[in-house]
Length: 233
Image (cartoon, rainbow, N blue to C red; front, side, top):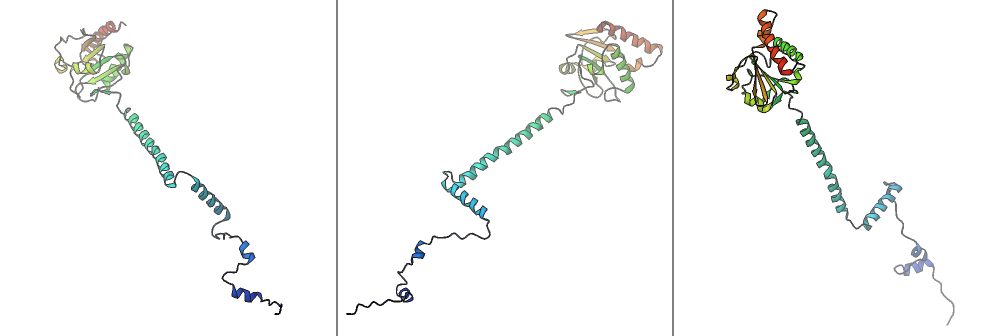
């Protein structure tokens, strides 16, 4: 038998063993990742790192979203609460200084002196009488801020209601009867009447003290005499 060997060409061998044949260069070749042409290399690297980090975390992504919502919610609540407090502090300053307990008055009642008048045509007192009253107060070392001026022609009030809201050391009453004030006391003019801790002083109207005639001077003289005694001037 002849020892001569028959060597088949490579192309024939490939066609005979194409299903089982593995070429050495193919077995050693590693899989390549084809980059996405629409994404930059830096963005792809960052996305891969984020995905890897998320995969290794114990908290699911859904839980992270829920936590973010829980943290954001208190900010809205705090904002509403601050606005509510702001509205309340603003509402506290709305009440005017000359209105207290449903009684309207002019002044600040700093020295606990109350003056009651009756003027149908003015909110508190007409200009001429107010100017004269300011002069009288100045002589007693007082200002309009030291008193509470109440016009009972514009609001029906008893003396009891006034003193309950504005406790006073002295109440000067110009041409207002005891009937209007709902009290049963003598109304002797230019004589102080003590009522508890309060002194009452009834006087004629300020309009009768206007001018320089003798009767006006007489009225002002009587009032000034009792005021000097009360204020120890």
